[in-house]
Image (cartoon, rainbow, N blue to C red; front, side, top):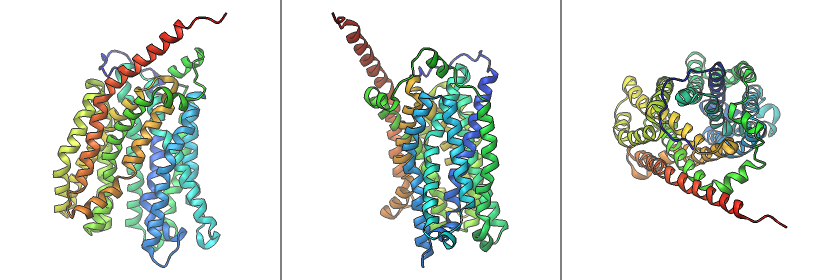
Length: 449
């Protein structure tokens, strides 16, 4: 587990660490570009694959398939986590980016219900599940790889390029969709325009794959191979020995993803509940996403300076405190500049919590199970926090009759995250004591005669 103590800024960054950081950035860029496209473009292609007399029904079914990607994430974390812990970080990272890019490109080429009948929606569901499997292991897998390759004094800054790539990738998909929607007629978008962003994934995937193919495996994994320290069943080891740490990791992930996931609801709230022009909302939100993503490297540098616990505590507290004025602004204005200010403020916090949060989760676990265990903990937060946040926010708005209803969710997620951060050190001490006790019992067992 990380000591969370800032290191002196004297160690130089070796070329291998720089290549690792760039490969992490490129991979998560394409991963989250692809994963986000489905949600952004569902309004155009859902009626083509899930035809109904009511377009709203088609749209809801399409969103249900969007959710299938989140359900598949924990399975992907387990499958690719095992590969990462047994076959190498590099192997798992190449596999996830190929799977995501291939699924996205095939979605862009997939014939609709009119051509294939029921085969079309079935294949679309399977492709979305494939995207979820890939996304379930990408973020923490890439963070793990970079952390294990970077010098101690720059480990969080370099690993922050992974969520930086995710933020820019997701926002790039939203920007491309918005530009197309503004320049192509609604009929053309439904006919072929929605396919273009998915097809762009093909060359991006090739580039990311070539970058990851050039990297070597992390020094820590190479040492595990030399020391014959590869664990036969990383998942079983995680649940049997490190279950307390998994709960802490899950709590931190809920705090990070549960607060960040609220931003996915902004478009529905502003365009649906407040009935603001959809094009204005889309452009403003996409611009705010880009602005927010730019803060990730700064968060990484600050975390290297002040430590993960301190940064997490500050940012999660700011979520709780700032959510009320931000939601007041979003509920009170239709000025695009003020809407940008509100969404950008929230998205800055969303991006600043990632660098300390993801790296902290990864460093909670020993190298032998890190790929599997960190993804397992992260996916707890993704499913229970990030995946449910938009639905819960909409429900709270209706249940309370107040635009501030969703701030209750933000406060709850922030408090869970803060509690997990506070518990991390104590759990680490208990884990260490259990390990020493087990070792002591092993050492005192008499040899068989």
